[in-house]
Image (cartoon, rainbow, N blue to C red; front, top):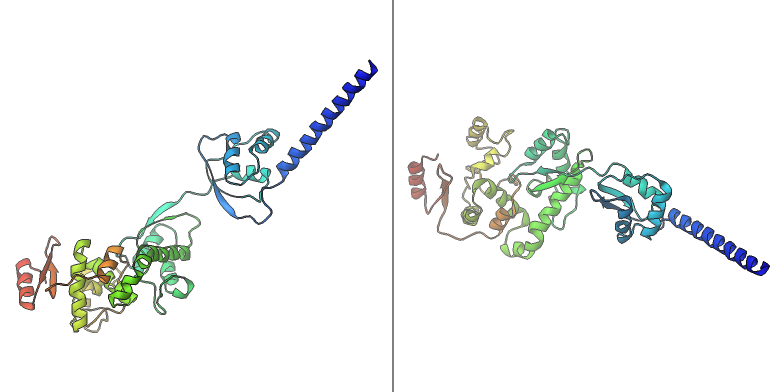
Length: 339
């Protein structure tokens, strides 16, 4: 009998010791991060309706914890746990307690769309950012006037601004964390991805520099509303550039206006032969891009369509009316009352 009691006592002691060992092991695991200090900060999304226990599998699959079972043990020991749905910045260097605290905190604010419209000038984007409450007036223009602060796989202007290179599209921005230089870098990255990278060899073969292509494209964006017609217009304009004829692109005279559609100021510019952007009087390309061109305009400037035409205009319905000589052009001006 004594022997049986001794065996039972020994078994119980082993059981207690084993349980205590397991307890201390799992507690140690709960206090140990999945990675040493310095692991990258990543975004972890808490799906709507997911329970705290259910997050363990997601955390383990993304390498943020070692074992979902230890996570569930930690939550049991912790008591209450109320994670907030959304994106959270976490790291595999965090302990389970730190992860749980972070996931109960406020998630990263959701992006809101900010639209850079095709053809916009720097001043137009600046005004839109001000209206949205992201910057103070002039901050975007000031940042875009320092090309050396940015990087690109193509040559950036060494003087002046980044006008023409800041790609127009919709960008997600986070209110309260807006960084104007970060937006500009994203626009340069978009220009490289959407146009420069896939067309690098074609730009070289075009016989034009990238900057010349950008300047031409910026005019096409404003001159021709239909992308399919832009190669034809580009062919006419490049022919006039090469032959030393004034371009006669009235949109260039609007570039320096405070308001693009200020007709009184525009007509005054058209009558000023000293205005460097007056392409009715000045030969060749204007001093620089007049806005932000899209891929369609950039490709048209790079690959113009040859034709017999030297002139063009748009009628009241904005339909393109090309002509072969000055006489035909004047006849079309009278026919459609375009002056």
